Every structure is written in structure tokens, then in C-alpha cells.
Length: 167
Image 1 (cartoon, helix red, strand yellow):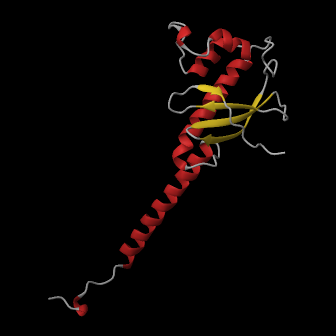
Image 2 (cartoon, rainbow, N blue to C red; image 1 turned 30 degrees about the horizontal axis):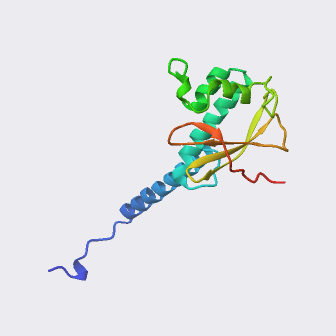
Image 3 (spheres, rainbow, N blue to C red; image 1 turned 60 degrees about the horizontal axis):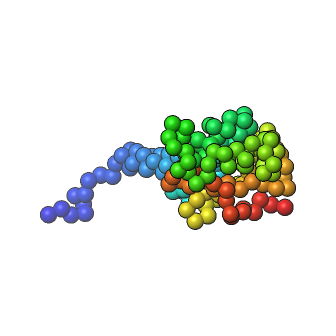
């Protein structure tokens, strides 16, 4: 039987080493969470949505960069999340390439923004199960464009939901 007087000696170095390892783990984890938040674009959302924020912002940036370069075929491929859409039957899509060109071509009468030369993502928030992204086009601050990114299918669409982007 062991008594209190028979207890092993307290090892101060071992205790200090355990505390350093524990606090280093907490600091590393906190640093990684902050880095993930920064990389995903400072989302004001739950952490399990941060990857979808990062992916959605990237897809919308790629899409609008293709529109700025007037590469409508590549932009349509990003829109429907199918880069090989020309080899497949594009008529199966509800949003055809012809309609897409009417909406996004710089010479189209249906394009409210004219030739798109610059874009700036102002905000991104989840609304239901899609990421709604507010984008300022051609540095016009009066009428933002709202696009929806579906993280499950990877497709883009026009968003019926509008975000508050300030006065």
C-alpha cells in the first residue's frame, strides 16, 4: 500500500514540457483557423462554410475574368461547371449558350452593364444552401450584380436574393 509520503517526486521539467506542448498545440490550431479564415476571404459565416466561400469566390472571379476577356465559351463553361460543354449536347441545359451570350456579351442589348472591364467582389453570404455574392461591375457602386454559387453542383446563376452592401 502506498502512502502520501511514498508519492513520486514532482518533476518540474516534465510538467513544464507538457504545458509548452499543450499551449503550442492550442496556438497552432488557433493560427490555422485564422489563416483559413483569411484565405477564404474573411467570411462572416460558420467555419464549415469557409471552403465553399473560397471556392465560390474563385469560380466567380474566373467567370468574370473570362467575361472581361470576352471569352464567352470559357465563361459559359464556368457558369454551368462543365469545361467540355462544347463536346456534349449543350441543348440539355436550361440556360443555353445563345441565351448566355445575350445576357453577357458586351454588344448585347440585354446586358445592363455594357462591356465588363473590371469587377470587385463586395460581399459573400450563404442564403439557404447557396452562396450569394455581390459584385460591383466596372467600379459602379450604384447597381451591384448578385450571383449565386451552388457548392453542391458548382454552377453559377443569377441570385434572387440581394445582400446589403452599405449606403
